[in-house]
Length: 529
Image (cartoon, rainbow, N blue to C red):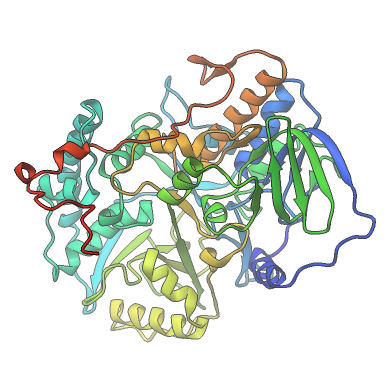
């Protein structure tokens, strides 16, 4: 039903295609449906499934790519002994927080078991530490950070419970006692492993309250176990298989290779226009575009989204998480270890976390290793040629293993997520001084245009299960509106009608506080003219 292609080739092709408008189909026409779902990632499929489960089958899924899955995307890489390529994941790669016996279970873990997805437990204790001189044991710093993080997380809970002001994660960690000096590169590497690797941003760029709460809600509610997906059918196998439970082969409700250019909306309905000149008219629409797509104005809205909505879109951050893959003719690194942490002598986040796919339980004979960079380092490698990045990566490996004559890789590849036109990044993050009310504005519908995706999940932003929960909720709420009922959200409460939004969000200091007694002696509105 769904075509498997090399995503990396597709990324290149679609990036080029975005620069040149496709010719309009002279026979293009508008079709009508009850619900239009914009995007065929996890949120879009979950929304469609929720509608189908509510006996609403008149919907369409409009997807940019030639397959479902969204940022759960894989590609061919390297060669197996028989000459066939391996499959590696460019986007989402883990099932995070599986579930505990008798407790709630992560829905992604439920799907993984249902569809026999190949995955292996990520043992974060299976780690060796390095710097520019080679192997150097500073693993004790990992325990130090984790002990102090527990104290910081407890304080973040106090701030949340008592409605106190948010802080940067840097502030929260420092107050708990984690204060790495600027030149303590081992501690910076440990901090990157513990924070940036998950959030795709540094502690300075992350909300203390919500960064900590988001971590707790997944790992404390479900479990602290993460499983790495290495299935050679691709992680999106579970999304396509779930879709197959309500979509037929060649289902006309699935519009693949469909580039949306603009969306008009009102209280009467939504019209979605495509690049080929066709359109879809719907009573309701669910927009599952990534936060990056919304921030980059890749699709226009008519009328313009209200100011409160635009503000919310620009308030949140879209991170970039870049995995750089290498295949060698042999596994020269320790075969029984999953992770390798490198502390650059000069630059925080410079090719810090390496992961072996040759470790037991993964793709053992692949001789594949990959290193991850995020944020500014991800943007930097995206802007430079592959060959330059390969030279830098190889220089780090040769520092880590100075006594080994390391050959050049037989295969080398990485994506460029921040410039991919249907994603513009990897996943979202909450910056400092964020409020739940601001996020409610990101999540809220505008007339009959609804929004869903990992970014709209207050509890699970950045996680694949966040996208699933949000897609399901949007689908169920629209189904209830169509039936003139209230939706049973998360089996705990009812949601009726539109979602809450705040046209005006107030600050913490009224104008009267800006006085000489508060250290503000000069009027902010003073003009010398």
